[in-house]
Amino acid sequence: MQLHDFDLSANCYKVRLFLSLIGQRAERVPPAVGACAERACRWPSAPPAPRLFFPFKESELCVC
Figure 1 (tube, rainbow, N blue to C red):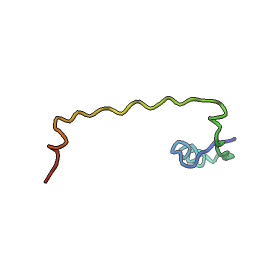
Figure 2: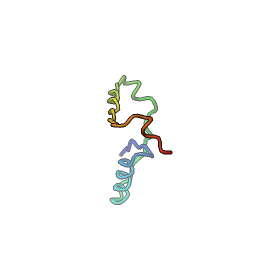
Figure 3: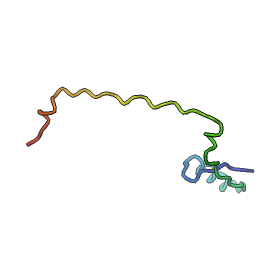
Figure 4: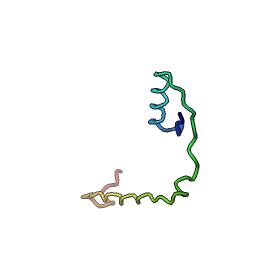
């Protein structure tokens, strides 16, 4: 069995832990760097940051 494993992923850790508990061996395969670019996947852009409403002017916020 092959496990496409990323060391920093919590989900991959859970799978490795489960496999060790049931005694199943798996070949760890590191993810291919740049594989996403090769498949031409596109990540959606992040939504714009919310604008916060401040009822005070900047000059009124000065604490002296």
